[in-house]
Image (cartoon, rainbow, N blue to C red; front, top):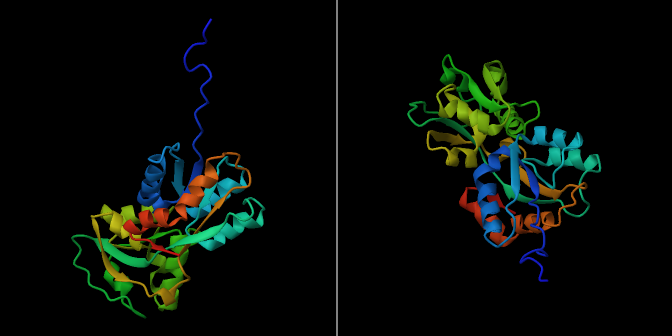
Length: 243
């Protein structure tokens, strides 16, 4: 008697789970689509602030790949021996910008001691939480080095991640915000008022690594794709710099 057709077909490969910084939403989804188009299972991606993701990993969340928006949170995970040795690499860069809604009439030049508090009027400055979320940490560094932090630290609208800060400006809940250049590019409802000098903050660097607990055979292939010339080209389309 013949066996039913397909009875011995190989089981469908499980997609890897990626924990990724919120600022990567459009670009990493596009990279996942490009990887899937090559015949691989499309990775599942969970986006949040890098600090929240690092804490999830430390708490034992099952995942395969971590992409952080800064080096310190990857260092944190590495320090707990939760990365697969030899798989960490920094591959993306970003810029830090001051944004307003598309209809805003605010005009400011990003420079030392600029009158940012005055430009806020009765509103608040939207930032990712400066007490740990990378975009907020970079924002605090920049505002501090430009001599502005003391005038605005009591006027913040801190958000759980950079996309939440972007949304506050996009929907008019905050007149101004500090986000990544790629976030501003992703939202047509906002415009860039100015770019913070790279010397005003640490380099905005995105590392990727496999997690030590990963058992998914598809995971390292996707990680290698992200850091390949083809993968990096996807991110450049969304405004990222590459290394």
